[in-house]
Image (cartoon, rainbow, N blue to C red; front, side, top):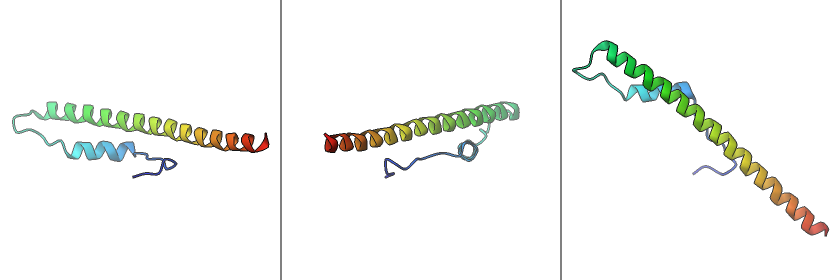
Length: 80
């Protein structure tokens, strides 16, 4: 399990390519339909990975902010 201070990020291109690798052409599927489906899946996977990375960056920032606030609180408590 990742430490709360350790960011997890996805490489959107690698993630999208991995998703496509698990999406074979159906026997009864026309090439054009398959290609459109692959393109849609690729773009959606790229966007999802980017969204995940954005959320992870926000979570990481919040964790750092909380940690900073805890340190400041300890300093204030010792000072007064």
